[in-house]
Amino acid sequence: MGFQTEFNSVCKFKSSQELYELLEYGRGKMVKSGFRVYPTGQKVIAYNPENQAVAIVKILASIAEINFQGEEVTQVEMELVRKLTEQEAAVQTALAHEMFFGERS
Image (tube, rainbow, N blue to C red; front, side, top):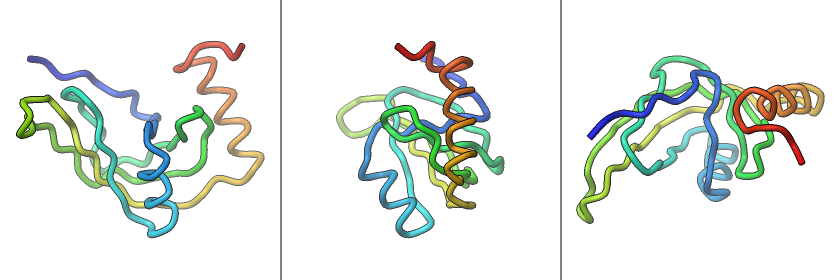
């Protein structure tokens, strides 16, 4: 049992519904498999499931636990700081592909 550390500038959503709720209501949560450590209190760039930068969010809480099915999961609660402009999103997306997600095909 160990913790995986996330990059302190990346918050990647795997669920479009979780991202929609964050953008629509200004607060939301995301559930990740495995134990992970997120930088509580810091602002990070949020990416959609297609690895495109969409917003700046503040991490409010990161809770790692074993659920009722015996799976290790981490819930991350966050609030929307602001959506990125089209130009900001393009730059952040290009940088993230080079640094975190691998080269674009």
